[in-house]
Length: 150
Image 1 (cartoon, rainbow, N blue to C red):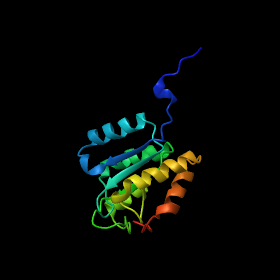
Image 2 (image 1 turned 180 degrees about the horizontal axis):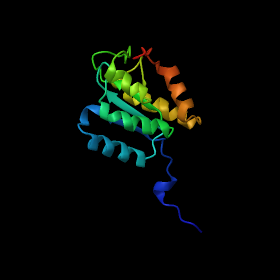
Image 3 (image 1 turned 135 degrees about the vertical axis):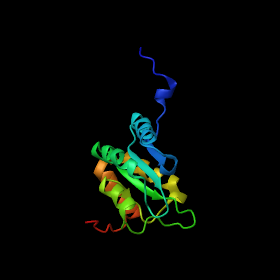
Image 4 (image 1 turned 135 degrees about the horizontal axis):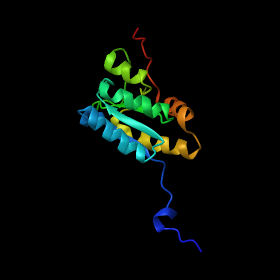
């Protein structure tokens, strides 16, 4: 008879990584954060970025790596005074993260982080992963039009 640890019997919701990018000050901190999250095998990552949607350039290689491995990366605006998210992507610190593969969310922001996590978990429970998961989340919360940078 095989014994199963009590903790293994519990059903865990799919893991969604949430990273506050304002707390990352160096490439080493970025690497440490993303490596720590990747150990958990997240189904998606949510990066909390500044109010306009800008993020630090040092994050872009890690965003690209996560997306290339099939983990959708969403950008949530830290615009506490409103209930909407990133409305347009038009300049460097915004478009660079998008070019690396991150998806900004338009109709929601940091005030509703838990709601976004719950919707992602529900979508994963329905069998959605990778690009299908990304499409479902964008359908739910919208994504701004990205102006070409070149």
